Length: 263
Image (cartoon, rainbow, N blue to C red; front, side):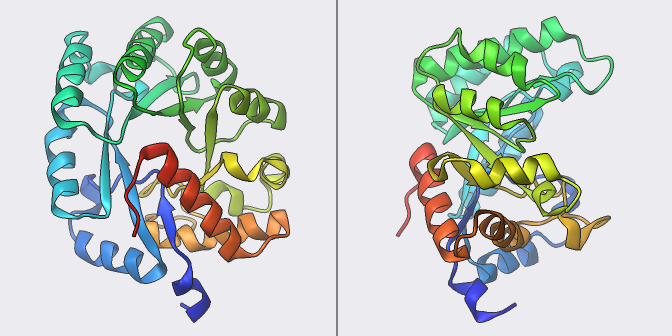
């Protein structure tokens, strides 16, 4: 890794460092992230059973910040009472965000009405406790936008954004950031790359979604937060900006959204 990369101060705004794929070498993954300039990571939950271990991991490492939520792909593991449990835990523990929540219209067999129930319940909760939301919107960006329009005062991020420039503008009008990850490093992702080139700098967050969505240089491998430097470099090249400027802007955006303490 070159010296320039180590001077970047980056925040991985979406990383599932709590999952089992990192059990064999989590300490080494964290060390590589720090060495690459990743000064903080937001770790979002997917279902109730994951909350305690995720919180314990974040408590053990000051650069990890928990978000608690109910992911639409885990419908089979949710119970409606989990919304009440989520409320109680958030009031007691005060994570940095609610999420990962949202809608998934790609995976077959996920009841759209039940997805909407959990998503809207978490938006109500976010508004009541004044926390941002981390939103999953796979093949569902328009549906997410329509839902957000019914909930004034919500702030947050649509992670792993892959929508159009028009959708990105609609989200920004609603106060919603977009998370940009590994897919932007693929040359074939032409629409996404054009969108990223034209987004307001204040709307951009960077993420890995590790262990998922590895970039072009790591296709077929487990993703990890140290690879955020490559995403930053790609975004900078697409925007004809310096990587250090992109790092500084996206780090400030992420810290502001999630209320992260940065030295």
